[in-house]
Length: 427
Image 1 (cartoon, rainbow, N blue to C red):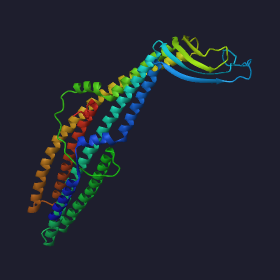
Image 2: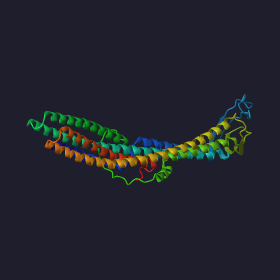
Image 3: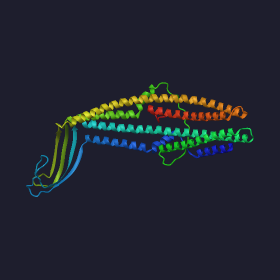
Image 4: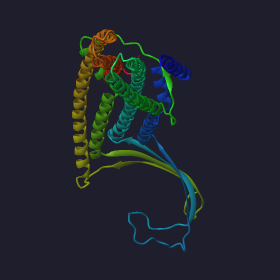
């Protein structure tokens, strides 16, 4: 059975060696290139930039070309009830021309709308950075989860091989009347428990690689030879530098600041609704088919002053609405900053706890191995029962799994700390 276990591990290592090697950095880069979540966020950012161009168009001159052909039944044709004031006479003609319109001033309304559009584009860009950081964290979690599942499966496979060997030895001794059938039953129960744990570990490994491959943009499950990451540098003693870094770098805060700035600019733009608008208009053209009383060409220019007098309270309500939204955005930013400070401090506490647990699980594993070796020796000498040996085996397996979990939990919590500090992906 020992040869069979060696064959199994050799085959497992050969299969792993045949798999494509994948580092954490490569996994992140692959996810950023292929995951649709990133592409969707980038499209939204590009769409927001088009809104900037739309707002800027209000400051640029507007050109329009027109061609008019009018036929009249007789020279005395007039228009009856009209919706506006104009010359009611219709003169038969065909004319074409060019009209130019240029805003001179609207007392900052268009400028503020343009600035607000830029702030919204900045918010969407920050939203893209947020999606990128969240995706990197998800990839790290799936990567370390798959590595942990691999480590657990290796431990469980070794446990199954060890307990199978013990069952074979106890069964042989029982045939020679050196051990009781009760010992064989205990050994069989321990083996079946290990097999159940092995089944669960294999399922967890499959699930982990499925989650990882989905984040990498794959549609078919693949296995990778995941490269071990070195443990990061020591944790900082104080959270204050991390908090300052988070307040400066977190894309969520940048998005909130941009949204606040956009709301403030919208409030100033709506305030300008109460002010007049001054525009310049010019037109020129030709009239090839015309009444003899009309000139063959025409040109005109002028200024248009539009003064809002009364809108039923609509403009005032719009201004107040924008001002209240700006105040709400300011308070929302403060709340977001408080949440970031809390999250950074909690992430540092969890990382410290995970680092301490890493050292404790190493000691637990060392003592569990010593206890297992002593229990195995005592059982061989007949100084203890198989129950004591089975408990020692269980304790050893639990300690090995705990150490694997502690290592990858610590690595993941360091990534969470980097995410909360706004520096994930920077190393």
